[in-house]
Image (tube, rainbow, N blue to C red):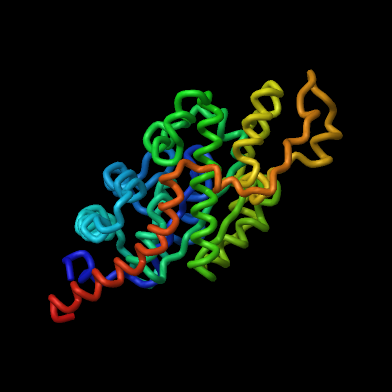
Length: 321
């Protein structure tokens, strides 16, 4: 076993938070800290754990984009080895006299969810979702810039505008994460919408605390930490042709996560000819429209657990563990 895997991890963790960049996870980190979770000390302005930033930069694309599964064992073996330094540094900063929940928030952790789950079978994962239509018009498009080519075809990258590419990535990665969490992490996966945190903060904070085993005054924390941004609903100000394409591209994810065009929106009035349309319905799932290489990713992610289990077994045997 590698040095990292020999390291005795503290109980009550790790607990990870992942999301598309700009989804409002900064406030989630503050809520977790207020509830008694150690979330690290080396954080940026967005409250992301910077211990793992370089690691995610190095490994997200190789992990997702591999097309020949025969190479995955070597990739994941190296991934385990390279996680040693950042995780050790994180744990060096973690000083707790009594057992304390611990983990970190870095939105892009969700791209490696199957890897982290197989490495840490008892981990918990909080999946934050924010309306992909708002995300499409966010200034934060770092994930699209760094990882868009993984889940978008070359034609889509050439012909689609940045907002359409953004919502396509939002749709596809969040559907993959949701599917993995729902199927493989019963009781260890929780998905909440940022909008629900803003409209029902106390109830949502209670839900988060119950999931992670945290304690705190939810009403006080909600009052101190939760402030709905003006950017909620900004997509409504965009022109109808752009919105039509956004809904066509992300229809499956918008419906799954509760962001469909509803009677409520229809009753708000036709502001300048906007919001008067209903996205065309198509019974085929959006996943079938992915680039061909994405069809292989889901099966590869499923098999990754088996490979990691084999790696751990071999390493245990070689170390006498």
